[in-house]
Amino acid sequence: MHKYPLPSEKIIVPRFEESAGFYTSAQRSRMMSKIRSKNTRPEMRLRKALWNAGLRYRLHNKHLPGKPDIAIQKLKIAIFVDGEFWHGYEWEKKRGKIKSNRAFWIPKIERNMQRDREVNALLKKMGFEVFRFWESEVKKEIGTCIKQVLDYVAHQKKFG
Image (cartoon, rainbow, N blue to C red; front, side, top):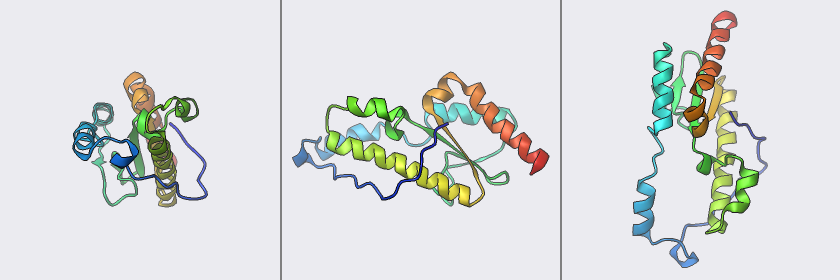
């Protein structure tokens, strides 16, 4: 899981414009359409494992901040499966490796990270426990991810 301190002011992301050397609208649209925001393989894998562990949940609850990938309203649990590129995995190392369109991508990813922190804070204020797993974590260590959620559920049932 990853956690960051709350920011002081909103990061502004520059417009993705052709005049700045970005792809044309048609090219960009075609490329971006291939990127999933919901129902990614790691998300589906985590959902299946949680279901097999006996947890019942709702998907992409639009009534909760950030529309968590998985939400267990009764237990006040919100789970996100974050892509490494979009959400800034090992950002301090990777930030310098972005070579093209840095003026767009660096603020874009930093704003995504900032939004993640804001969503976490809002959900916590509402009494939710927030779990954020990296896609690679789910792929390589799904047992650890499931255990974290199940340990929290067991604790809630015991003391909640």
